Length: 301
Image (cartoon, rainbow, N blue to C red):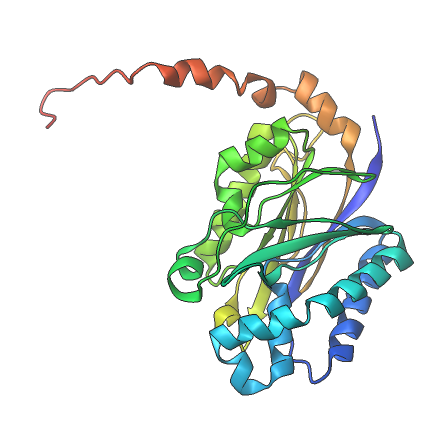
């Protein structure tokens, strides 16, 4: 076996803050709790940073356009808090994603922090209908593989986790663990990300970490309802839980899902699992290169 470590996925509620110091205190407590359980890699959810819209007051937080700008302006302060905590606890943190203005419209960006500083960021690739049609949040350029002391990581933000070729591109670049921060306002939405994440763990024989926002947020209509449970998934193969779930929280209850992961087990499963989805992935190409044979039964149209 190889390096063993603990991963923590947050089920994260959105809170009202009167001062930035209140946000810093909340995040400090959250990181301390996860690190106290031995976690070395902490994952926060998609759009978890939208709670910072409260710092602009009710009118700003209640305006979905103004809220984007309010959250974005706190970016440097948010970075400073994460850098302090990552260094203090010696952990890697995927911070909650936030709007970042790189042009006229924002991208949805998650930043990865390590004890030595900012490692990099991943922008969401494929936008939901709400992001496209109502909010005006745009996709960012390309995918990034993060080669870190806690493993080779890829990030597939929420809807991105439902598109297998994005995850596959990261795995073929070397990813062992995929991080799937999410923000969904219905149980169906949560299940789409859960099913997608579990499928990515199956077909790539890797670990996928889902961190959602949970509960109600009465001050920011863009993220007013949040449904989910944090979970860490693996391939349902020998040596792994038969159901593919290493750890999970209760539905819509804030807290941490924590599981120990062995990077060597990922490599071993890919090399000699009960099935070899990762190795056999390339065999699909030949099968889909030829046209589909259509056979019509009696009475078909």
